[in-house]
Length: 70
Image (cartoon, rainbow, N blue to C red; front, side):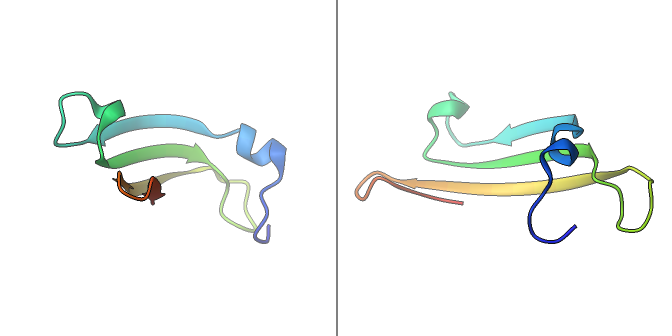
């Protein structure tokens, strides 16, 4: 599969569960957050078996510089 995903493989992903954790009441305006994603798809290399994957993404927005770190 390499480092580049083929478009048809990415489009076949199925979101299983998504959750966001912040210290703010409005998560979409939070300066820092943790996003938990569970998805199904992207078979293990060499098989046709679709498995469930989990990802954790931490984000931090710096108001002084306007930068977003993931």
